[in-house]
Image (cartoon, rainbow, N blue to C red; front, side, top):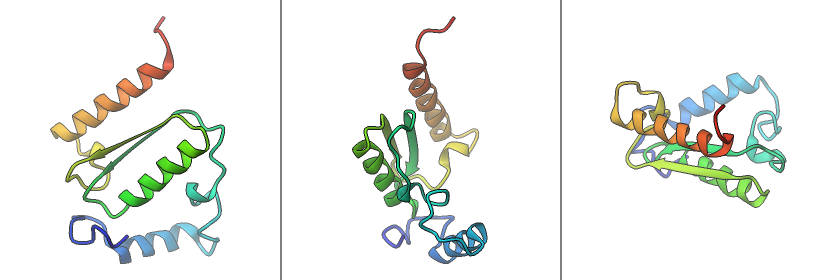
Length: 115
């Protein structure tokens, strides 16, 4: 979480540590329910991961994509160049519109014909 520390406009290692501590409430951070990287990934449905190249969690997203692929999961990782954490939720931006389009295409390609 230090590779993009100067690039991420919204997250800091301290903030992520505080959020993780509150979320875990004393639980082991490697429990599969808290960390997908610690879980068995085989059998998951197709997985779309969207992350920005300017976010601290990009390497976690890349690691998850690699682990899922190694487990035989149909996984797609889209890394938005220069974009921050949760950029797909930044409504009204062209980047969010593009991410929504990617998600729609991902779902259509895997859901089969409509009707």
